[in-house]
Image 1 (cartoon, helix red, strand yellow):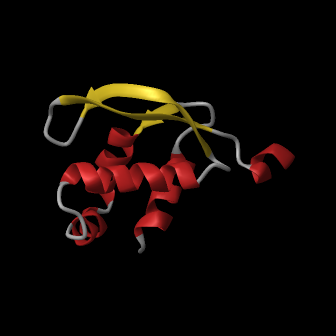
Image 2 (cartoon, rainbow, N blue to C red):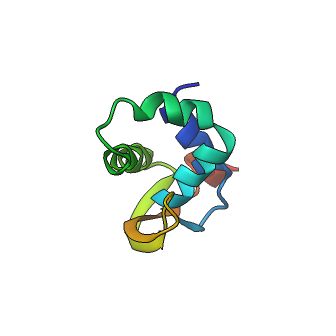
Length: 97
């Protein structure tokens, strides 16, 4: 499954109005779609560049996620670092229901 679709599916599973950061999405990718994560990381010089790409994918899903500032949370190296914070929006189809 392609990375963009998986990221969107992960966002969709997050409760409406909940806040999440890029580290959350990366962790879910590693837990549930490790093959896809590992297949795509080879396209980048380092994990930071790859995670920036994942952040951009999240931002492209503006119908279900909106940028909400920055977060400071544990990364895949078990160290705290800054990353983008997002808020799960109600999807248009959810608003009409």
